[in-house]
Length: 184
Image (tube, rainbow, N blue to C red; front, top):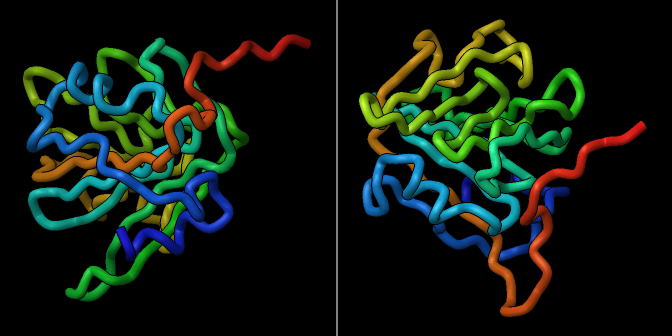
């Protein structure tokens, strides 16, 4: 997590301690286990590692509630460690096209940044699948690469973790309920 700390500057987790809320290898590679662990805990950081060792993920400033809604935010972003063999080059990819669809918070699925930017369905038939197609909801890499996983649009994961902010008992945790509809 120390490598990710600089990315959290100017976020609601910038100065807050972080705690591991979900570890797919311990809690289960399924949507029910995911939502039991992450719902109504506020903003979070997703970290996944592909079987080939690519580390990627995203910042979800509004967290999950599992009500089946799109959660908008221009503060959301994706990231990956890449470059060379040391994996120490960190690239941050911003939300594009306005705040809409930053997150798809579906109770039957794992984390989904945009409709296709980083999707980890945690489906019963292929629970370790992760897909990435950048450009519509999150920016592409400078060289035009349109997947967090390089040339691969989909990969198998060996690890998936979610970290949430640490809150004192009784302290208000933002974004722990459904998003209100914008009325004009």
